[in-house]
Amino acid sequence: MTDIHKATFGAGCFWGVEVAFRQVEGVESAVVGYLGGTYPNPTYEDVCTGRTGHAEVVEVTYDPSRTSFEDLLNVFWTNHDPTTLNRQGPDRGTQYRSAIFYHDGTQQKAAEASKEQMNRSGRFPNPIVTEITPTSTFYPAEEYHQRYLEKRGLASCHVR
Image (cartoon, rainbow, N blue to C red; front, side, top):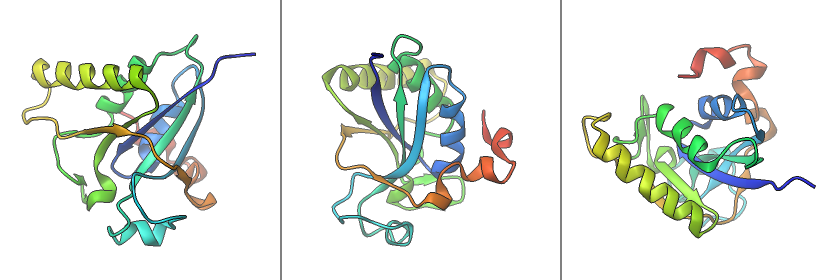
C-alpha cells in the first residue's frame, strides 16, 4: 500500500491553484474547499460573505515517494502573491488569504522554514503575510467548483 499524505493551501481563488497542484507528478488529487473557519458546513455563498472565517483552499493528496511537501510549497509560492493581506488580484476578503494549513509538526517546520527562506530570498518586494496554522475541518466545495477551469477548457491558462 502506498503512503499517502495531505497538504492544504490557501492562495486566493482556489480554481487556478487547483490546476497548478494537479500538474505535479505524485499528486493523487487536488480538491477545492473551505477551511479555517467556525461556521459548520459552509457553502460558497456563505464563505463569500467573509463572515465564516474560512479560506478558499486546495487539499492536496500526494505520494511522498514521488513528490515532497517542499515541492508542493514551491508550487504554492509560485502561484500567488503571498505579500498581500486577504487579497489576490481583484479578490478581496479573508477567504482569499494566503495560508498553509499544516497536518503535522513536520509540515509546520517545513512551512515555517520555507516562508523564512522566501522572505530572505528577495523574490518578493514586500514581507510575506502567509499564515501557517494547524488544519481543521475541511469542507469540500460544491461539485461545480471542482476542476472548474478544466471543465471550461481554461486549465492551462492559469498556471505560472
